Image (cartoon, rainbow, N blue to C red; front, side, top):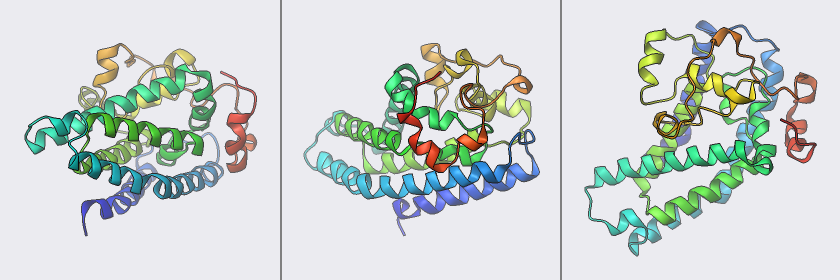
Length: 261
């Protein structure tokens, strides 16, 4: 079985491990019933993953192979060691997902879709793929453009997908970790305490910490925020504080309702 075929298994193994860790080493007690949130988050994750796979997986693989055959894209045009192309491909993809994430907060139209993710009133591993289908589809188009422009190889893309899934699961998880570990991890990567700030109801805090795998982009571009009292963070968005209004079907309709902060 090749690495690409293992990708969905790695995703669900990661999901299960972080979910179990949350039960034994939870950072905080939930403020709303887990089952009510999970009944929205898990179906969204499954639906998005299935549709994304049907629409984009074959197209992405075909584009990568065609670009390699015709030496299209910057990395394909340069003579570099394969390992360096893989590292560069992962860094490029992560940088552009950082920029895309920033835009989903900065542009009102994109925020309409992205607020589905931020409307979760607690944060745990199920929040990791609580996204509107529209945002998933836009993200696929961005990845196609980046892959074509930079000539991202198949191995780099597969490793990136695996790292993104595990990173997003980890930094959304409600896991209590040693402070020293998170302070070391944040030097390069995104720990839960950093992303918890990003999910704050306070707009100034929410508009920071856009990194997905690496925290270096936030550090380099001045969007890093670390000094926030973790115990005072309220998760969610201020305009949607009723769990009854955040079910699966309501979330699908959310981008088409009144745009609010």
